[in-house]
Length: 427
Image (tube, rainbow, N blue to C red):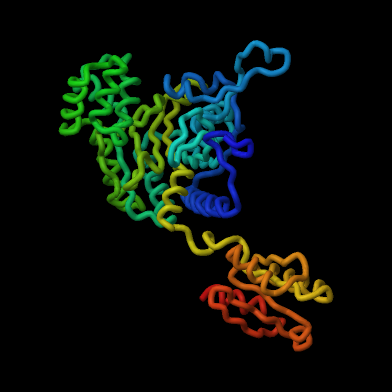
């Protein structure tokens, strides 16, 4: 690995990448606020005891631990850890500020998290999560609102082919007990294997269950066949309510009951949800109800449900499908002011200031140079317009505006330059 490369599983973000990220985040934030979710931020690292034991055995292994510092450095012990997700910190916040929060607390949080995972396509060790959570109610309307919100986000971003998979953790518990004959102590390990069904198939899941000493491969395959063909009642009625209520929302008819959906995190207690698109191993986001997690900090259970969109995977898919608007894909400059000669520096700065005051993103070529070189530079940055103002143009009170997309140059009155570029850019 080159000394200039970032650490494995992390990335540097160049301007074009940041514009794409900010576009997605702005849509997510705008939609979430329309649904009444309020912003929250928490520290990048937590006390290690806050995180350990909340994500199951597999999750514990993926927590980035921070060694003790100062005189305790030599012990090799960790007392802090980088944030693994945004849900456990939320649970801590609710317990800490319970008297300052409303009865029904709805928050969104868009911040990075860290996992010591194996990097893969669209999967990183440092990545952003975009969460919504609702605290204080067991009503299925909570799930309905969240599924509608995330559906509206994806629709505004341009997704048309996503599907929402829905299951219930207690249905899974019944399945593991009835179809796989597994005692409760083995359920967590079995769920980890089941959660990979859409990635490695039934044969792969069965092999993993055998490797984990849960049951034989043949028994696992038989259990999977029964599970996939079984009509489940009881708890399924709760999910049917969510599906029916969602039909009049942005989620529409995209929701499918899927008894194979597992969601690996151990704190889920009720409905679990995941969004998938074709040709992507993994999901664009997921979540579920976790009515017991806050009780680990508060001493009493508080109903809670949340959903997390995977920003990185959304951007990967949108980039591959060319889904970003032209303004985002093009670049961050609307117009570049060229410099004809030293005597025109003051006028160039005045023009740039006027363009900016009218809402245009204006850059100034930093020094006098041949016009051809300046145009080539603007073109390399995907700038759609440049202004040209030599001695003759200044004498006439005009500015030449060159459209680099069409190649046409128009003489425009100095006072009308900003309006001309705004109108041309909207065509």
